[in-house]
Image (cartoon, rainbow over all chains, first blue to last red; front, side):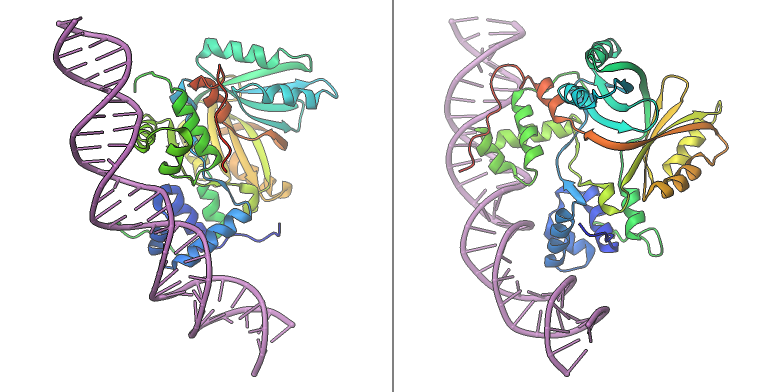
Length: 170
Length: 170
DNA sequence: CTCCGCACTGAACACACTGTCCACAACGCC
DNA sequence: GGCGTTGTGGACAGTGTGTTCAGTGCGGAG
């Protein structure tokens, strides 16, 4: 996995895919002003390089009945890390788990059906021998939803110099 | 936006899309054992209901040169919330921002090109009048990457009873 | 009991896109 | 100057798409 960075065409392609995922290779090539083969090659390259992890559907937990999000910081008993991971991985409400520096040893993102339900989830999460302590922060608002495109623009050099070129669709 | 939940067919469809995003409606209908129109209708419904937020490419920040992830907890000066949001939204390395309960007022996810670069990012993030204090936790490992499918299985009832039915492709 | 709406089925249509291969030109590198 | 890489523009057959339609089975309302 060599350490190259993406170029402007990659950036524009990703941005295009981000805005109109169902666009297809052919239409993308038209919009970007390059040959279809080029788009196809770039896409293959991006996927092979791991830049594009996947194209899976982005499911909103709130829309399937889990509108409450929280972050829990966990303190783990020495040597219990692996066991705790397995435990948390088995809990569907745990959407994400990180090991972090500092006194809190792990940080995990949780969702629940309600604040009352959050109690159940937390009980299930921390009800495990290896977890010494936990503190939870409930998410109230999400001013910046998870995003990568600004970073892509920066990394691909789209920020410097010429404007992103999305012509009028009509 | 009424409060219904997704059923098993929705769950299976989402799971299928998650595994094989490029699958297409026709092939999906074959795999699920239903008519093409049904899949199409379900997909429309899921999209309309906001369950499927989008199909955008899932870009890995590490693969475009930002391998370091961190979470920063910010304490905000009274009344500066909106200004701080705008400030953070303008920083590409801020991938996500939440307002949370507790003394820390906001939690944000950052990425950087290196730990040294993280210092630059943090300086930029906290170098703003409205931010009183911040504490940063660097992510070391990510035992559970962001996932929603287990939750989808739970919400759609796929967990109870019959097994997910992915027949052999051949 | 009967009627209605709803969701699903299976089929059809014209159209567009996909994956793949080719020959050729432009570029940077040795 | 020769070579490998990358992009171009064209071609091909195969396949999926969006859409529409009539028909069927189910549950609820009257």
